[in-house]
Length: 319
Image (tube, rainbow, N blue to C red; front, top):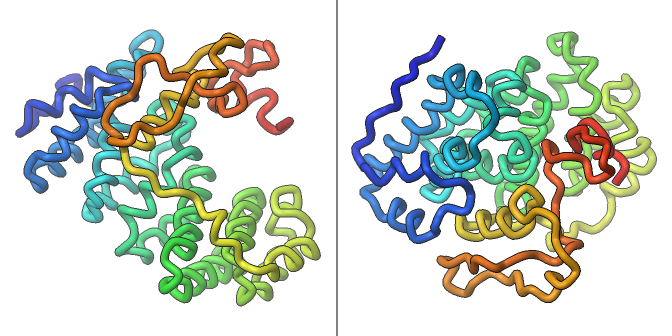
């Protein structure tokens, strides 16, 4: 059993992270980011560690209080904004927890934004990310986001493409080795990685990809049959499709204006609302609502089909 005592912080302003959901006033975020760097990073790491230390305490509570239980997300996005590469070890410790823990604290955020945090905090330590990727005890969708982070590194920093190709070559050869025999059933993960290799046009790895398919290690239902993969991977690189790296202000703005859990059901007359990003990135208009086509249904939101089940357990694969 973990503790029920909250951590003590050097900066009292950190307590605000325990009182606000993703609609936290961006002025508060700016004030936090202006605090002295090293003591701030130490405090934010305490916040993230608190999600581990008091997990049992929070998990035993009835229901979910969005306003008081977003603190691990706030800590992660603030550490990413600070580019705190020394926080990678703690990040990976947290991401090594079981899927119940990860679903409780992060749910949709694992696949909606974790790649960006991993990319920034892990930029100086590809070896540690590779070893984490090889660990079959890590949740599948955490490892898939590590792959996304590496692919996006190649797209955003073309000078590091060679390093990224070597990283993937090591990973694929590991999966093809006898050492990874226990991971042969993880065909969905390998299919997702193949998708990332298509994105960066990793033609150098066609031999390894072909072997994955030949040995039935990559599920064709993810990236398509091998002949399609080879055709797609040989197309010209389209860097315009790289994912945007957002500031914390842009990310929070996107979440509160496009995620169904924050916007709720929209009326027809809401279509005329302007959801553009404020120029100064520091104010979220309280009346801001997105156009209907931009609303995202989170994996843990009720399925829009009306079944009463979570979206991830119902129609997520029908889109």
